[in-house]
Image (cartoon, rainbow, N blue to C red; front, side, top):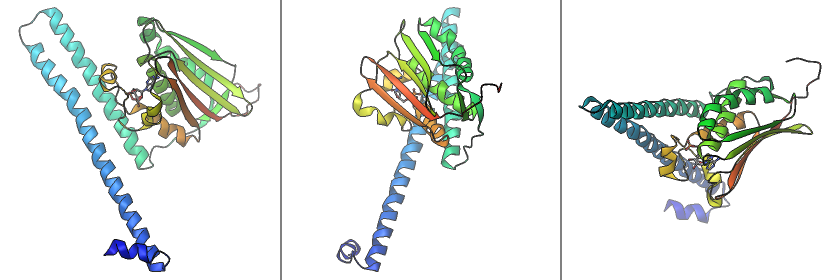
Length: 263
Ligand code: ADP
């Protein structure tokens, strides 16, 4: 038997070769299993909004009150938005897998970039009485792809808002510590159970499935965020206490910049 032989001749060259082949084949099996799981998740994620779309489009065509129709059209709108995000996210991940997710770094004032992004959340935050506190030193520069790094900030802030209760606070801060720039987003929301913190970077992983659906999440945001952060040779860490809140910290090299420059 192949397996037995493999153990018996562990020290032989042939044994080593057999062992390499064995581990290669195990890896291949793992990759295939992951791929099939990934495809199953995609199908599931696509089917759900499509079912809603068809169902609500059906009822919206019936004889119903204007008020009801408006309600159903709103759901149709939300679900198509979710589908768009899902497809965009999948496209990004497929690119990352083929090493085709590329970044074009330039010297960026991270305070200005962040302020621009936070502005986009102003309305959603205000509607829910969430206050976003912005703390940043002046003129902190980093070498990043402004679009892709903007996407990272957007995902993290979006999560902070999504998983926070109404009338709460989010603290967004940028600090420069020696040659490092530390960006942190702290919320006072539901938090993440200790044993699941590392899982949230996995594709399609969601802590609370029903709640995550309500919030319009796809479970891909942090997976993409991690890919982009890695491409920048930066780090991302999450610390969280259930029922107290979550802090996401991104750390990267600062671009030492002369004060006189106006970029
Ligand atoms: P989603 O689109 O579901 O938000 P993400 O990949 O961005 O997907 O996040 C994965 C999961 O991690 C979320 O479904 C949520 O359960 C959890 N999570 C992420 N950020 C936070 C946060 N700030 N507070 C609590 N839970 C969070």
